[in-house]
Every structure is written in C-alpha cells, then in structure tokens.
Length: 102
Length: 167
Image 1: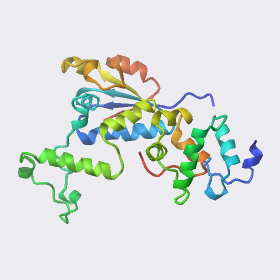
Image 2: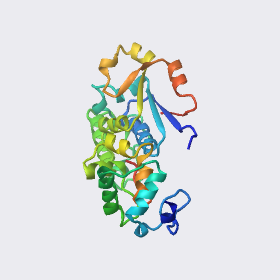
Image 3: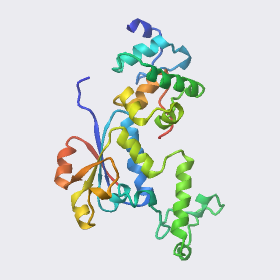
C-alpha cells in the first residue's frame, strides 16, 4: 500500500509538493491513511472538482467553494471527509492547503 | 491516532456586525482542520443566534476610531469619519451596508448562512442562561442549531481541556 507513495514528494505535514505527480492510486492510498477506507462517487466528485480548480494554483479550493461548485452540502462534506475536511480533501487531491478562509 | 481531539470554545459577547465574524471565521477554520468547536453566546452576543436580530446586525461609526474614510477608497489617509457626521441619521445603516459589502467581497457569507455552515460542520452552540433570563428570551427566540441554554458553570464543565477565545 505504501509502495505507491514511495516516490511521491510530501512536505512535513503530508501534503504533496507537486500536484502533477498525483494519480488516482495515490489518492486512494492517502485516503486510507486519513481513515477513509473507500472513495465513493461523491468523494470523487469532490476530488475531481478540487483537481480541476486547484491544479493551476496548487492550492485546494476552500470548503465553501467546494460545496458551491459540486452542489454537495456542508453536512455531506463533513460526513464524507470526517474530522477536518479542509486538510483531508487537499491531501487526497494532491494539492496544498486552501488559501482562503471560508 | 488515539490522542484526544483538540477542542476550541468561543465566547461571543458582542452583537455588532464586525464582532460576529471572528468566531465564525476561526470556528469554520477549526472545523475544517478537525478541531471540535463549541460557541457560547452571552449578552449582546446572543444577537448572533436571535432569529429577529441575526440578519440585522449593524456596525456603528459612533466612537469607532478604526473607521477611516480611506476604507471607502478615498485618498484621505488617516482621516476618520468625523464624529459630527457619525451621528447623522442613516450613518449606522450606511456603515453596516458598507461593511457587509466588504465582507461579501472576500466571499464570506452573511452571518445566518455562515453560522448554519458551522452547525452543519458539527459546531455546538449554547446560549448563556443569565443573559437569557435578563433579556426575557427563550429557546423559541433562537435559530435552529442552538443546542440549549446553559449556565456559566455548565459551560466550564463542557469545555474542559478546550482552548477558550473570548470575543
């Protein structure tokens, strides 16, 4: 499982430093490390949205941008990525921490 | 990880528009980072959860030394809104409107929507019993999402081990 992450550059907090190295397999492995056993369709909806909007800047969108952009609710977001969705979504999507506060 | 989750508690004691945001912004950031959030509303801070007041919070220019004309994009440097001007009828409405515009400009939602986001994210909200009694309020006056009315001692019990921020 960790073999996938062997050549992936992570910073001290566990965020990928090069978003272009990201693959779906990497996302699955990081998700498991973050306590999410399987990534469902809704998880992917969020991850895909983050990849689309965050790739250019390298920073993940904020939670509010995610709910607005995907149509999922705040409750969904906290259920899908429990205990700290902002960090978890960014890590799993291979992006840095969101730069906004909302 | 088996370590106990980090907890943070905010005490909101002010009902001005600008004083509603610190707990909302920091509470939301805390939830996003997996930190448990409790908010205790006391005195004027109860306006933030009061159905009739929540969407009508204001910012007064009277006695507000931070309110400079340059906020409006005027090249007036450190010049504040003159005190004689601050008391003109309609000035509080104007500064409130202006601040709401500034808040929307950074994509921050209005107070009611923001607080609902925190509730949906798992924040626990409590109203101060003494303030509720003083102002003749009850749970019916508060928005959905407020858990209950508690005493100061209850608050102390429920925030054991938490970091407390007074606003």
